[in-house]
Structures are given as structure tokens and as C-alpha cells.
Image (cartoon, rainbow, N blue to C red; front, side):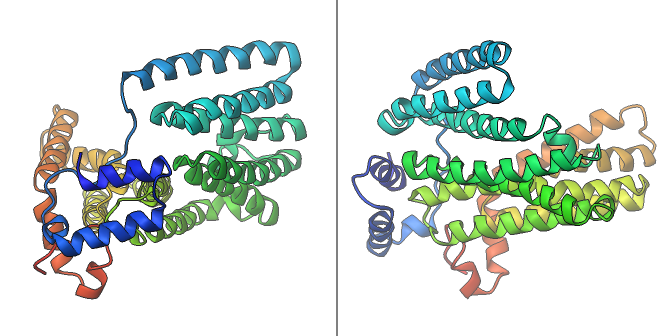
Length: 354
């Protein structure tokens, strides 16, 4: 176990505070400079399982929560069943999140709690709560559906904050932000009903950039990635990535599929790769890979390889991902060397010799 893993576990168990862990990391860096100048392993580490017990418990949780929801829904109705699942998720979190500190079960219980709470509040207000269709704009929401969406998002956001305060599960912050994004769409649907069809993509990207800025705030506050804040940042980056990438690249590809469009998409994906290298976060790049594969397929077809366009595009994309993974540290050093030293020094894991 290295220094960062040791400090993260100490924080998780309440032995030291996050501020104390950050101070210890700074002292360790001063005493042994190689800890910040030599990245010997993967630096974007998030613990999903601590052992097979996590998987075993997760299977049990899915079975219990799933069957409880189904049985209660037929007997009590959707609002009451969702509220019961939310309450059960909170109670089980007292055991597996607060007491036993199990990683994967904590994530599952948090997701179950947030989704169930949103469904309970929203369905109690209106049966016209079509979550993804409203967010994606595939169907015009009714006034009752919009009200349910706004109220459910606000209440669930508060509950997610209380869940984080009680159990300190890092993904709770991203979950709370996600439901607030959903609530923001509902509010915009209420305020700008006629304009939302044309503004939705731009507003989605804007909200994604706001989430990305929040993620970077957590990242910059813990450059050594030794406290819980770095895991919070990871989940926020995972939320921000599709919000930013999907509307931008989706609109570009929807306008045409020729070589010029494909080249523009690939140029944007390469730009995302630079951002990923600078921040040492791969999520935003992963979100652009689907669009990159379509763009590569277009260019390969134009080059006269129509029969194997899909296979060739996936092969090129796979080689790109593997090459980027192998050369990640060297490429990151190259990117950081091109940034202003004062800014590069604030980024997570600043690499020396700039």
C-alpha cells in the first residue's frame, strides 16, 4: 500500500481529517520529492471493490431492493413503493456504508436511494414524470410533469446532501448535482417552453461545463489525490463528460456526415484528449469515443474501404486508446510543459522538470 492509499483509508475510517491528510501529503512531498515527480502507477484510482465480499453483498442488495420495489409497487402504488425502497436503502447504508465502509454496496445503495427518492416525490405529484424523455426533449412535458420534475429534483438534491453528510459516500455529491441538472431542465422548460427545442443542446453543454468547473475545484483542492475530494471529483467528471460531449458532437454529426464533418469531430476529440491529459481525467475523452468511431468510419469509407469501414474504424480507435494508455505519463508531461508553469503546478499530480 502506497502513501496515497494509506491516507485515503485513514480519512475513510475517521482517523485523520481531510485537511490533516493533505498536510501529511504535503510534508511527505517535501521530504521525498519523487512522490510528485515520478508517477509509477495509475494515478486516477477509484476504489469500487475492497474484496469479493463487496460483489456478494451487492448481489444481495439488488435482489432485496429490486423485489421490494416490485412487490410494494403492486400492493401500495408507485409513490409508496419508491419511498419504501428509499427508506430501506438508507437503513442498509447504515450497515454497509457507515459501519462496514464497503465500496460497491455503498455506490449501489446511494444510487438506489436517490432514484427511489426522485421517483417517490415525482410520482406523488404527477404520473406524467417521464424522466429521460423530458431531459432529452423527446416528448413535450405537461405542466404537471414539469412541476413534478422541479420539486422532485429539489427534494432529492437535499436528500442527497443529507446522505453525504451521514455516510460520506463520494458519489453522493455527483448524484445530487445530477438531480439538480434535471431540475434545471424542468425550470427552463417552464420559463422558456417555446425556445427549449432550439436551446436544449447549448444549455446542456453549458450545464456540463458548470459541472466540469465544480469537478476541477475539487481536483485543484487536492492535487496529490489523497483525500475524499479526489473521488468526488472523479464522479463529477463522469457526470460532466456526457453533458458536454453529447450535445456538441451530436449536433455536429447531425448536420452532416461528410469528410469535413468527420475531420471536425476528430479534431474536437483530439482536443478532448489534451484536456484529459492536462487534468489527468479520462472520462471526458471516453465520452467522445463513440463519435470518433463514427467519424473514422466515414473517413475510411471515403478512402475506398466501405466493406470494412466499421472494423477498420474500431481497430484504429482501439489502437488509439491503447497507445494513449501506454504513453499517458509522457504525453501528460508534454502537455503540462506547454502550459503556464503557475497553472500547471496547480493541476493534479504536477509532473516536475517543466
